[in-house]
Length: 118
Image: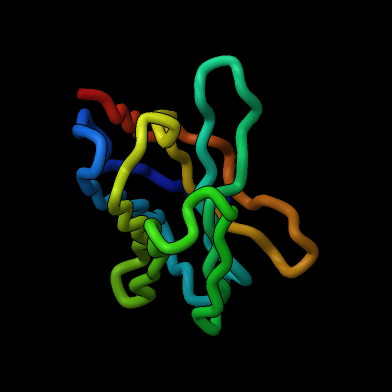
């Protein structure tokens, strides 16, 4: 089973930027997709962004045009560049891997906290 460690979160003012990283314990080259989720207090975990093995991306509507997901297969790392952050982006962010059937392949890690506040 692949293990994933998220980092890069923090406190940022509205309109600011953060870049999250997700380091995998083994090669992500063969992973059908790498994904970022987030969970805000009192809310269910939601899929934010996904990138397939051939670099196709998709995003939840609320982050389109502001967030960019990318993958570095050579370094087994996935990134989430977050720009124009809003208070409603405040959440714990998690990454995971997904197979061709849509099943998640890793246990949830501790995630990384993103807080957007003035």
